[in-house]
Amino acid sequence: MHYETLEGNVMAVNNVTFSVKEGESFGLVGESGCGKSSVASTLLQLQSDNAVISSGSIKLDNQELVGMSESDLRKVRWNDISIVFQGAMNAWNPVIKIGEQIREAIREHHPANTKKENTEKISELFKIVGLDDSIMDRYPHELSGGMKQRAVIALALSCDPKIVIADEPTTALDVVIQDQILKEIKKVQELLGLSLIYISHDIAVIAEMTDNMAVMYAGSIVEKGPTSSIFSNPKHAYTKLLLESTPSVVGEKKKLRALDGEPPSLINGLDGCAFSPRCPDPSDDCAKGNLNMELIQIEEGHWADQCCVNCG
Amino acid sequence: MDNVIEVSNLIKNFDVSKGFFSRNKTVVKAVDGISFSIPKGESLGLVGQSGCGKTTTARALCLLDPKTSGDVKFYNPEADEMQNLDDLSEEQVKQFRRNTQMIFQDPYESLNPRWTIKDIILEPLNIHNIGSLENRTEAVIEILKTVGLTPPQNYLPRYPHELSGGQRQRVSIARSLIMNPKFVICDEPTSMLDVSIRISIMDLMLDLAKDLQVSYLYITHDLAVARYMCNRIAVMFNGKIVEIAKTEDLLSNPIHPYTKRLISSIPVPDPKYTREKYNIDFTELDKIIADNTENLPMVDVGDEHYVATHDVKDLLI
Image (cartoon, rainbow over all chains, first blue to last red; front, top):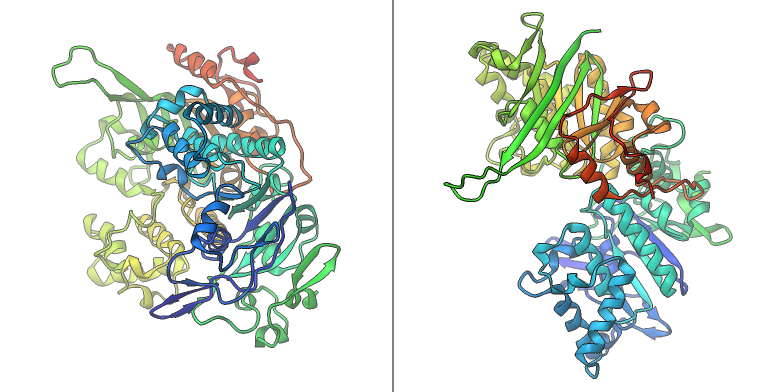
């Protein structure tokens, strides 16, 4: 997927391939501007007007989403796949009660439901995310950040989707609230057997939340596989640096490694390895850009970019 | 060891009475009787949730907002003695401002967008009238090198919007360090930055602390960051310090239930790591903290590990 801009095409998402099984939680991690949120919006076909999907496909239960008509998409969105956007808690309409806003979403997809049924449904959802029924009659400004975020999660669950995409759902919250929300999401996921795509810049959160994960850099996935195997045996130089630059409260206090430089500009795409200018130890092939980015499998289900696998 | 700052029983109330003529005064006790001191060259981390009074403490210490009561003594290297903030002459207030600097959270908002980097860093020198004009420019070039913005000539004529977040935060650091302060208050200086540049800014600050003998009061909500930066950590809840200890001691042996809760809420970058998760009854804790009006002194449980004394044993769920 690329964005058409006046300065050229920004290749925001390049050749990103992954699959999420039923009931699995999948993490997508990377620094800002690496294309995480572009992936999220493409999955729902909600990308902005200047975005063009040049190739590839998105299949949901064998249903192709790329190129689907808007009216069909409206049926898929929320019924099958829903999203918790970054900062979504600030997207509540300030003059409509929370309950009414969730009811509106359900009404759109299940017009036959009575108001009473919808209210019961919301009350059930609120119980799952740990909110009191009285919140339904409150306006957004009466709620704290954590409560608003819980209500957003309830909204995302309102039409019983199979997949929920959570795009940095806790970034604006402080640590204790973040911890509560993460627990809530995990509980909901296990309770309802949902698939979860969890997007974050914080690798520690990904470690707590996901079974499988992918690391993105400059629009491409550079490493993917089971979370435990990536943490115990990172292969890509960028993954290694991400792990070494994350402070922790447990274990030995260790010197953290800084990642120098900035990610490359994605205008008009890149040749060769996107990470080589910042790589602490690039091979000759890599520095010259002879190797294109391509994932190769190193062990069962664990893939990494060939560049770094060759480096050792 | 000598201290750079000693704070005792600092209180900051905000008047939230309704109406101009209202007789009933309602106050929010944003900072409610906190005490700590920071030895020379050491750093203290102030951690807690949002709204617990961390930033209010910082602003009161910097004389940005007047404090309600309490004693703040700071070390004035120009007079080589501890001075109380309440009885400073005008000249001494200036000296205090030279020696105490602040780095703010948001590098996008704390730099004047219409000034060049040179103007921004030069301003404190002009205000305090330090050195001749040529020397000032040299000092700016020197400090830009120190914070890793090289070659400095490239940065002098630029405007803040031309720099990335990390570079801007380096400019903020340069601006505060050009006065050669002994004490710098940092209010979440890395929370707006991307993971990859966060560590380089933190490392820069640690190196500068060592080279220039600066002490930090480092405000953050992230214990993992505080652990990396500070010798000691104070945990704050609802305007009060509930526990204060050496960093490793606090993390390995937390005593107050709120500290335990805070530590257990930090995600660990290791999927294999499992630990005891704590939860506490926040409404109950709120009540206990609010009821403790007489500000009982904290008890020392050994090795300079202080814990607030109120009955909170059965709060853990």
